[in-house]
Image (cartoon, rainbow, N blue to C red; front, side, top):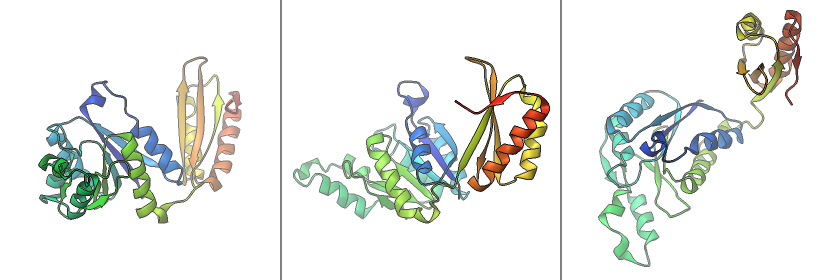
Length: 249
């Protein structure tokens, strides 16, 4: 099972706001022994958003979409998801009930504009919003969340804990690395391929650093049962090549 994220908002791409969802999604998945496989940032372009969802609906990845589910003219996510899925938008009865309950002390606040926020693609299920009761929605293997972190993150936790608990594997992903000095990446490629051949269940990574001193962080990530052995392949191989290495600080 792979997990991806789509983060929507022109304000992020323009630099007016800094994206916080990417790092938080990595953190929340990691706490459950899961990993984020990919992430895409999109502006408020209906055609672009629709094309992205059409592509991801055709795949099998679990997708978390952040932003654009409100009712203002620049919120296109709900309509784009419906177009991509080939279904109409409809007022979801549970979403309507949640919105009405949110304003039960002042029913006049339940305006057509507010009810629009409960119009989801036909066949969707709601995602409860503990912050203000304006729900998000799930459609197929996609989960649509607000752009506001204080709403989106508890809702993301609910989705993970409700729908994907069987996939949890805390501690499943291990990582180990060394700091190599005096080598260029090209000089380590053969060693990295040898490590992958011997340990196909892990991934090898190489992260060059230029400051404060030039070096390469060389490491492995994957099944903890293989990581300990795979990092030894790299350590021994680097030493055999004549380059000094140390453990990370």
